[in-house]
Image 1 (spheres, rainbow, N blue to C red):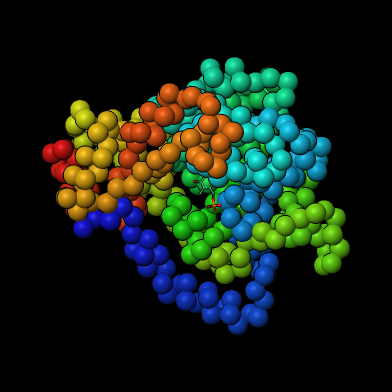
Image 2 (image 1 turned 60 degrees about the vertical axis):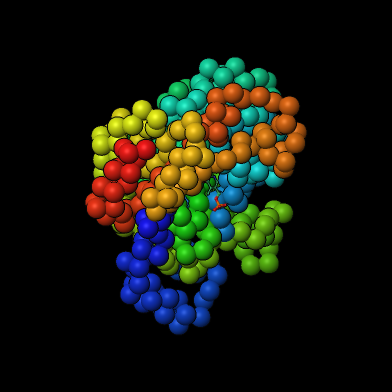
Length: 366
Ligand SMILES: *Cc1c(COP(=O)(O)O)cnc(C)c1O
């Protein structure tokens, strides 16, 4: 059996180092916002090339606190419209709603699984105040076009980088440093994953970083002095310790994912499977390798019979979710087609070349 993703295999590499760091954490007697969170924030900012990083409890809160921070700074206010691709993972939209803003869904297109750029520009009106591009599946959003539009219309650009750790633009800038601020998730399955929940905001805006570092900790500027109505959303100290072990290997892991993607793209030859488009540069970190297939149920059943795990990211588009009944009347044909046909095949830095051989063979025989 080749599982869809073997998280134990990914983390087993760090067994001894995790034990060592856990022991140091335990012995420190300091368990919240300690030396590991501070050090990780510096190391991750340094990695992304941003001036600041603020750890949060998860990726959803990272996104939400960016929006709350901009409200405090007077850049956003209740009801402002935020543009988001209609095929995103639900968390992006929840963050916008939780911050009291209005998500405006924009039709997607299936080559980059991102905004349809014509639809994006058409959606801009006087109430539009921000764009939230998502580097879905690990593929960078078309940031040059998005930033140009934002500049023209004076909009904030907030990256949802939860699937984009280490993705690099043609100009050499990394996800997290391609807009005004970015939210990351370190959920265990992400390319940089903790052993529990975790998240972070990256930005070059000192004021925003300072506000978010308060907001995540009850809005406190110092112990028991509260400047804002904040939340409890601190990056956990022990997760920060584990993330510090793994960060130095992120680029190497992403390179392994790209090698596997390269093999899939060159060796899988099956008209029934539409493979993702990739220009073979650093813009894709293959968080997921997503193919499109018309008879998805039959395909997944076939893969299961041949003992290869698959998953759907994601089966129901946000506008058809019960939680978002307000969008129920909307129609996004391209997005609906994506959700009907996408299926993710195994992708992990731990896949062996024999496993890739086997997956390719099974895919070609479908
Ligand atoms: C994982 C993810 C999130 C949310 O991160 P959590 O840490 O689970 O809160 C947000 N957006 C995208 C695109 C994600 O993949």
